[in-house]
Image (cartoon, rainbow over all chains, first blue to last red; front, side, top):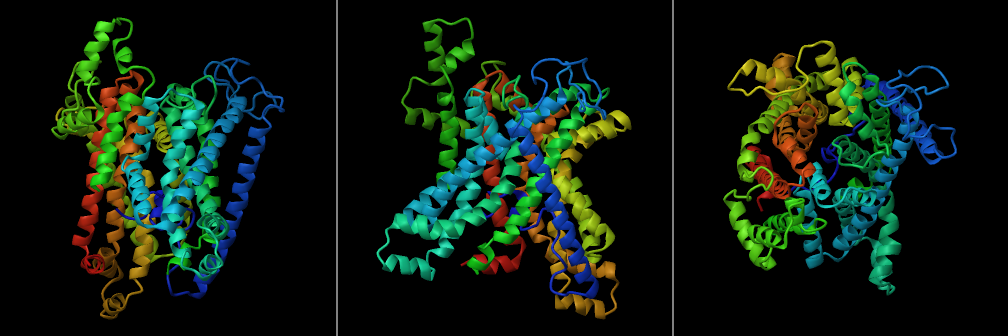
Length: 311
Length: 306
């Protein structure tokens, strides 16, 4: 199986999710100009992405301090339309609960689930991948086989299978999403460890009598950390989509805790008459995923040392 | 590969044991007696040692016998087979749509790289890649289904009954699945065509006075399309995952919908059957693609056949 399978599609395909690469080789005068214009456009995109994620994060963290309506009780008539006003600017949902409050508390779920499970996957996958790449041999073969087995399931099907076994709860959800995000990190960390383990500074450390544990944590880890973290953004985007899909199918966080996917799902019955019930959470969701993709891509281009290290 | 297959099947079989509580109590509901529990355990083979159970389960699964659903009393495989055509049609239609749109777009954006359409497409495809099936499906259903009334929003007509209605009903779900693929395919192909256009033989073809279109299609497209084909094969896993969402969204009687229904009704055996069927199909197809790729491109054969 190819080495790229665990990564998000765009990464696996070697393409940039936000911008196509410039014309290969030849650079004409107009090519340079557009590349520069592109560079600026991409910086603006990145700034917008940071602003959006910052806003969502601040609102999600500070939700308890804000004068928000309760997310699980009606505050007005059902399906009030959004408008430019102080009272419920995003309108109300099918049974009159505040959409603004639900969207913000939903952000809490989506972001904390997404970020936490990717961090868990990063820790587990990074460790396993480094060990596999550094020690090689049988250990590498065992970890590789386990990894391939996880990848043998289409992601959403794996997620649904885990959901079918365990009771729906926050820990289950975070655990299964962490399992889903682990293989990519195993592959990345393994490739990185492989390329670094013969480098001079590792040989120097070993000849000074450093233990394997010390080489792994003090020599390899700092070198791999940035490329792993930069990929984390892209994987957070993938995981948030997975969580949203699960919630949309009614198998995510149990109600009444709001989640973006769940909000879209409840709005779907009113698509013909009150499309805003679907579109409000959908737009918020889309902007968040897009922001993670934009930032992840920039981070990857900046910190990805794989290409240079492997050649 | 063999080890992977073993782990996958073993983990799937073990699914039933991992669940909370006894599968028998889930299946029996209120009508529960020690006698019945024993009976169910015996039926499911839960009273035998693990290795023996695995052996007999795999032997049965190899002949597509995944047991009988306790809910519908139907063999699991027959309910999968009944629904398989819907899911396959969706996946194929989506793949076809994606390639039909992606190839011309990639040709144009590579030919006029950095042109207006190219820049517009680069933004548009970022958005497409970031939009999950359940959001995209509802947006399409709203604008093309509810508003424009061009396509039905829910329901499925079997192909044999009315091919035209069938295609009309399948179009929106297939398009939902295709949009993400279109974005990824067109970007990959565009980058590859741009690289191919730098080759000497393209220059030679141009200098012979062949038209741009001819050079693009006859000289550049074929050698650029190999990684696209690999990706198209690998995208099957995503199409299956997307099909689960899309089938539930558009109320289509496919395998994905069966999976969701089975999870909601705690029909563990059906879930197990679908999961192992899909995973095995996925593994086999991916392995076939790896072989097929080398067969398709002589240059790869040289590199990998050591």
